[in-house]
Amino acid sequence: MSGTLYVVGTPIGNLGDISQRALSVLGECDFIAAEDTRVTLKLLNHFGIKKQLVSYHEHNRFTQGEPIAERILSGESCALVTDAGMPAISDPGEDLVRICHEKGIKVESVPGPTAFATAVAISGMPSGRFTFEGFLSMNKVSRREHLESLVNEKRTMVFYEAPHKLSRTLADMAEYFGDRKIALVKEITKIHETVENTTLFSARDKYSQTPPKGEYVLVIEGAQEKKEDFTLEQAVKEAQGLLKDGVSVSEAAKTVAKRTGFKKGDIYKELI
Image (cartoon, rainbow, N blue to C red):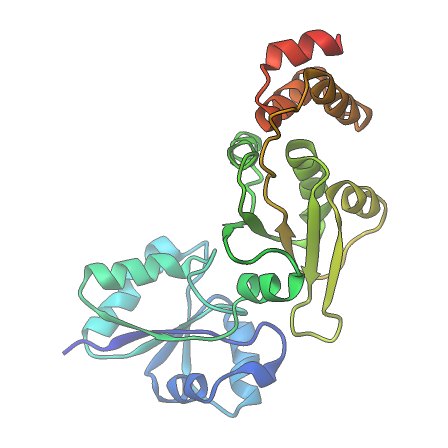
C-alpha cells in the first residue's frame, strides 16, 4: 500500500505562524522533500524535529521527482515543503504533485501561509477578483508577451519579485500599464513588514535610485473601463508622456493603442 504526499505550508517569516498539524506531519512522516535542506533544517531544529531530508528544487526536479514518488509508492509518506509559504505555488513542487496524481498516490494538503493571498489582504487593493501572475520571465520575448497579455486585464494583478530585479520590473510595468495604483508589500510577517501604496511611475522613479531590500509582492490595479469619449488627442498625449520616460515612439504608440482602442498607426503618425 502506497504512502501519502503531504503538501505542507510553512511560515513565510514568523515561525509562530506554523500550525500544530504541520508540526505533527513533519514529525510523523518518513522523509521530507525540501527546496533548500539548509533552510528546512533550521525550521526543524527550532521545533526539535529530526527527520531525513531530500533535496527537491528547480534544478533537480526532473531527476528527483520519480525517485521520491517511488518511495511513496513503496509505502513511505513524504512531506513536501518550500523555503517559505505554500509549496507548488510558483514552485517546482507542482511537478511532484502532478507526478503523484498520475501514479495514483494520495496527495493531502496541510495549509499554511501563502504570500500572494496575504499580500492582497493587507494591500488595500480591490480583492473581489484578482489574478496571480507569479514571477515575470527574464527572457525578453517571454517577458514582453506576458506584460502585453495583461494590458487590458481588469482584475487586480499580483506578482512576486526579488529585490535585485525590482527596479527593472517596475520600469517595464510602467511602460505597459501606465501610471496605475500599486501596493508594494514586502517582508510579510517579518519585523520590517511594510505596505507601500503608491503609483507605478512613482515606484519606478523611487527604486531606480533607492536599492530595494527584502522579498516583494506587487499588487497592481487592473485596467479601467475604456471611456467612450476618449479622444485621439488624449491618446497621443498619454503616448507623449511615455516618450518623456524614455519609451520609443513605436512602443509608446503600441502600448497606448492597446489601452485606448485607437490604431497604433494613427497614434504613431501624430507622435512623429
